Image (cartoon, rainbow, N blue to C red; front, top):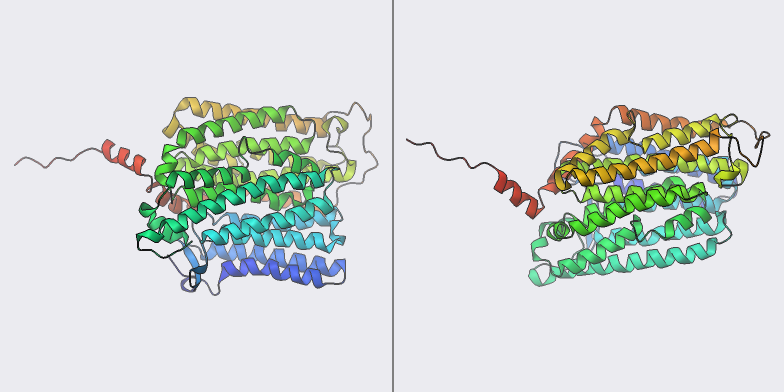
Amino acid sequence: MTLWSQTAAFPVLTTLTLIPLLAVVAILLSRSPKASLRFGFAGTLSNVALSIYLLSVFDPSAAGVQLMENVRLGWLSYSVGVDGMNILFIPLTAVLAFLTLVYTVITRHVNNKTFVACLLAYQAILTGAFAAMNLMQFWLWCALESLPLIILTVHAGTGQKRRWVVTLLLQYWGSSLLMTLAGFLFLAFGLVGSDHDLTFDWLTLKENNAYLHDEILVFILLFFGYAIRMPLFPFHGWLPLLAEQGTVATAGVFVVGLKLGLYALIRFILPILPGVAEQWAVFVLTLGLTSVVYGALLAMMQINVRRLLAFVAVSHSGLLIIGAFCFNEFGLQGGLLLAIAYGLATAGMFFSVGLVYQRTRTAFMPRLGGLIDKHAAIGLLFLLAAFSTMVMPGTPSFDSAHLLVEGIIEEYGWAIAIVVLLGNVLAAAVLLRAFQQMFIVTSKRHPQPYSRVPQPAPKERLITIVLALLLVTSGFYTTPWLNYVRLGLSELVQAFPVHQSQQLEAAPVLEAPHE
């Protein structure tokens, strides 16, 4: 463990959380839309710069949690830190929050300062959650996450049933929060009877997990709680409805929020309950495979492009959970890097769809078509983002998916790997078909659709250029990102008792030489 004072000039993780919160206060107190916009960009750009600083002071060759900040008050504690599990999620959140704010300017949501404030609040919540090293602290951030999302959906959503969708979302997320709260309480009180004080500290629980009780019950509570958040089949029902009825202006940051469920599984289940995770691997594999195929097949049946992207996200969630439960370095590294790549790519597709909706006022693919002539930048953004989810060479998902497939083959064999690849091929076919229907094929309902719509604005090109640079540069050179996560996940692999015993049994026995 390395304290922040040993490597950084200031507590960078707390600063990354506080800056968006201070921007929220300034936005709410501002008297004009221009002032609120300035505060919003100041907050997001500051966090982008701080994220770059965070990456520069993080040492990929050092083991354990770095930049640790820990303040204790009795059994309450504030604890943040970064390691290979979360170091890349914080910069991803910062970049997509900035691009989302640019998108709000294009779609004219900037006149509503509450809207801009909610975006910054959402960024602060996700940053605080990814940095948290205290179970209850993480849970509180997750509970707060629903507030800006509900406000944005109700006041800026495009569907007629968005209030009903908010009620449904509260039911799903409320169940998730209750289950995970119960699981964290079982973990914390599980150490009380073993000469340990009540604590929610992640490091303490991980190092003393041999004293825990009711491990299977805790696993069930945490796994199903965060399976709702991923979302994993059959707990995905809220996502397509929210994507259809809500606002795509939140897509950039919200897509990162979807990865919070996967991160929670890797952070709080695998290191603390490694033995139970191995026992339930077949069950998790079954859910993952079902999600991969089911999500892709349901996506093929959609005519609303927002619902289509939501079901593609369900398919991707199944792929990521399989990688996490490979219990080897290849699967974990590939799954984590693929989550980052999918976060960028899915945000790009949602941005593109949102810009199309801004011009056409529809998300139904049969009503679209022929948009590539007038909106080449928007079409390029969708196509490049779609390629990044198809494991195409030159995209960040290429090397990540190769690692993931290698991990699946090592743990489960070729048959499972082939099913996973077939599911990915189906999802790719769905996205290519959607691109064709929206941008290439001439609409049957409109012989010359939307010909009066103006050319894309420079801000739209900015989103396309930034996401294209991030996807292409990280796709052709993934080694730095792999170095950031490698050591932290290698330590995690050493914690799985069954797999470690199998490796010891398989290792050759060296006999003493005869005299």
